[in-house]
Image 1 (cartoon, helix red, strand yellow):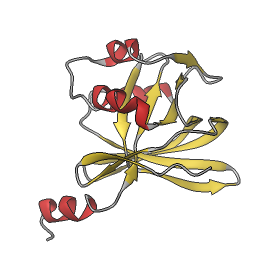
Image 2 (cartoon, helix red, strand yellow):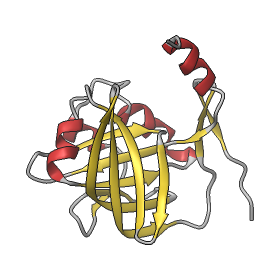
Image 3 (cartoon, rainbow, N blue to C red):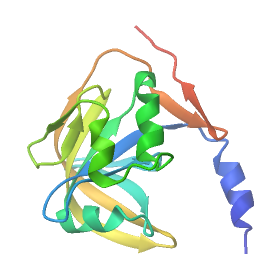
Image 4 (cartoon, rainbow, N blue to C red):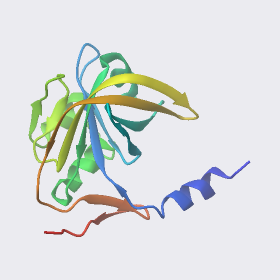
Length: 163
């Protein structure tokens, strides 16, 4: 069996965009920082995001059945740390940082995000320590400027801006 640390070390060599995912609904408000995200299809527009099944926020995503993906620019680096749990703020407290608005699904959308994706949860699959959340995208918004916040070799980086 492969050593988990060796796997994590190798994965740290892959630069990944940083996103905040957020949900609201009957189970309550929650959000977290993620880098494990991928497009699945454009017909219908579908994406997947991986969340740790032991996170206290995960049950809220599963019960609310809606979530947003908010792609961070470099200006929102501090939000990444807050939503990653590197501060002592939990659930709704995290949303006192940044400017947020409710989307069509009721999921919170970060106003300063480079892109927002509003999703309805269509499937949650448990794999190892994580859930793969598959969401059908029902609305998108994007900003035409700004550098993406990346996570590479266990530190933040910025993408190069292209005009």
